[in-house]
Image 1: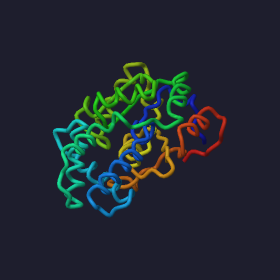
Image 2: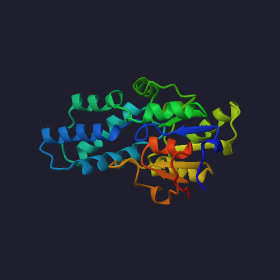
Image 3: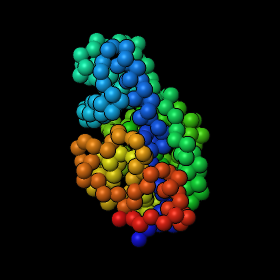
Image 4: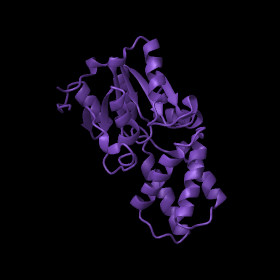
Length: 243
């Protein structure tokens, strides 16, 4: 049976990779860094090195704010390729969330869905960076859960538990929530384990979050390639069979 918008009173979103197109910016930055330091590595290698470093750093407790996560990732990448750390480049990398663009379909899709459902953000980010992204999106979420707020990073459950609690206080039942994400590791697998229905936006050409611990277990109720397609399916203008 295909999922319908009328099945849900709230839709929660991962932000980076799902609504904000961060991966090309990360790849471009690391490719420029590699060229400056005579590192022979392609974009996929650099992005996956970042992905592995990110997953490790985000497990550390107490949790770091996201700029510090990026700082630590940059140091790990430099060590991996045996390059001395350039503090200016590290600072630029830590500040890069403020420059990441939105996907072209993000704002319109969110606005359309918000006409019928509460819209939440469950994001592995700090408040300041997310505020910038919200300005880029020109969108205000009904519920916001950041790593800074809960002191943890997805796939750990505090994001989900807090978001569900926020929505329940707004009168939304747990079984009326749909969670949407691009990351199999950080979004779809934990949603499965928590009994939330989920939609995977498998953005073409994007790699972050598609591998790593738990990713192979992910089983989304619906798979689409864009937010625009998700909206079309939920509103009944396009048919795609759910799991």
